[in-house]
Image (tube, rainbow, N blue to C red):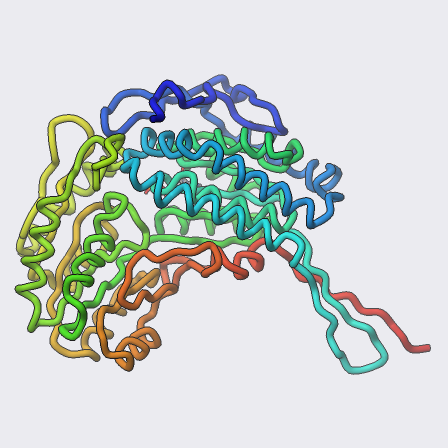
Length: 487
Ligand code: ADP
């Protein structure tokens, strides 16, 4: 079995132009294991000077480096090799994310890392299939389109799925031939650094992928507002998304945003109740509730309400919360003290608002940022705990009686990332799939993902679609070429 000793952590360096370098300021910060509150290692603190160097390296690699000349199929081959090397080092990578984030090793091993590998495999297949079209225009012209990489891409990622979020960003951008400056979240920088090393080993030319660790308002902001960055892709909170959009307006760089959510998980009386209970558990407690598409508003039809809440609370109360490195653990630690305090604050808010605390509602143990799976019942859709993203293991149960009413309530949110419906009635399922305003609709399932299927939000959950063929839109320009065939 993998132990901490087997994890190769790059000490305190940034990855710029294929080399491991200190930050310009020489500053560094510690990254903690949230399960133990102990320091794992020190990480370089990049700032605007480092972002400048990384962007310059990415620009040079884009305009003049070998990357530009590599045949598309060979770009795909490099992506394939990255997938192979991740597979080869999967236990180490899983442990790195578990240590840095606090999520259970069972999940990093069986969910995060396989999805990461799949993402690189999927986009490896796209690299030589990105092409333009010929268009029958009026007049004596030959018109065709070229699909070209956007250029230097800045990517800012969150801490909830550290390596997976890096993969969602890096794989399609590389498949399209861009160069990248990636800024991982300050809470979880380690697996991205290791991925930089893997990409280099896979044959990615210097400067194509640069990784600058550092804080959001410094390194992240410098990347978002940089005049020589052509596109910014961001996943994180809606408040930060707003700041990034403003910063990006400086040079009108293209942006895509994948932001927060308050997704409705709607259970009808005609569903398979036990499956729906299991789905509600996954919907809110997977990854300690630190999931942008978490099913945090649980709408339950009145006639099954009591039975459902009882079954759910029994399961929640029996979840194994604890040491993320233990293979039997079902829920690990929240990522940081800041998140831990924020979630406990929302639990207090829920009590004050008059919601009924059914189970959980407090920290778990004395050390580490563990919180018990928490269920609030008798929630009103207007309460803060039903409106604001908690980003923790706290679900708000709301009772409903009527189909139209639940659609209306479900859509009564500033967010629109995902929604789920549990029913055996095919008509109702498709009707709700049509009427719910969200980028992903799950019917009789929750948290289903695939590299081939698009993901992104409506409303304040952001715009642009990651994954699938849709991500190629994010990372390419279309150029229209006109040739005069006349006299
Ligand atoms: P949270 O508040 O849940 O930690 P954020 O949205 O702040 O989530 O963080 C997601 C990513 O955005 C992280 O990599 C973080 O460093 C970065 N970030 C935070 N603030 C800014 C900012 N002002 N400009 C650019 N990036 C930022």
